[in-house]
Amino acid sequence: MSRLLVFYNKKQVAPVLAEWPNSRKPSLVLQSWREQFDVEVKKVKALSPAQISCAHDPKYVRDILACRAKNGFGNTLKSIAATLPWTTGSMVSAAVYAMQNHCNTFSPTSGFHHAGYAHASGLCTFSGLTIAGIVLRNNYGAKRVGILDLDSHLGDGTLATMARTGADSFISHYSLGEEDIHQGNNEAWLAALPERIRSTFSSCDVLLYQAGVDCHQDDPLVDSGHFTTEQIYERDRIVYSTCQRLSLPVVTNLAGGYQKPLEKVLRLHDLCAKAHLDVLAATASRAT
Image 1 (cartoon, rainbow, N blue to C red):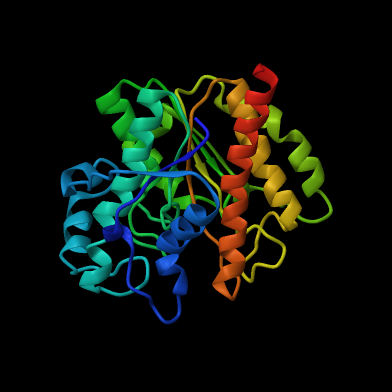
Image 2 (spheres, one colour):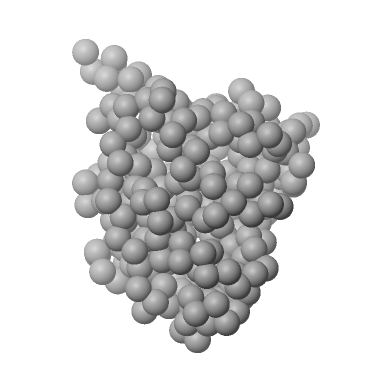
């Protein structure tokens, strides 16, 4: 399928916050992709509080959605809370479709991997990755789910929610933030990425891929990675090509990216979509 399957609803977009203009990133990424690529927007089903609670303390979920507890942005705005069932719903909807149809999908979402079992942190409120893994296991028969987190920062919330819920027994997880990857060793890391994917995720039914671009060398919040623009593209190409050889469907979300102006971040997310389509085109060419 030579198009991007993007699970998006305008209700998943938060209002622009002065200090975090990235809150409107999903809609701008989708607009950019539509201008350049063949995009099919798929329907998103919002999650209920009970569904979100599969990875979180139910009281915490209720308090967040009722604006009694601070979200990942450190406020209790109703407009932010209203987006959360839709952002997590986008991730879950994309994951279910990918597994059932054995294809790659995209969820233009961020703000997942720092959210703890009963607290928000680092712009993250609910752990959409862990939620998706648990839903796939409990409701759709997945035996093992992979999470490849290539955001620059450690997915501490993902690890915490996995451990608290027992999801670490069926979710294979790798976070770039666990390693010290920098300009002196990132080429070696990229060269080793195919084998890392094969050894860690080959037994999975689906891979949840956080294609964060805050690992770019110019990002003000870069921790691990320090990749050039060309290396960001190569990273994504390796992920999609390796998973294709493994017959492993990939669900991609946006994760972090904080360069200014925001257009710099959008261009890096464009590379992710391009890498996916380039892999599909190369495969089709070999088949003919």
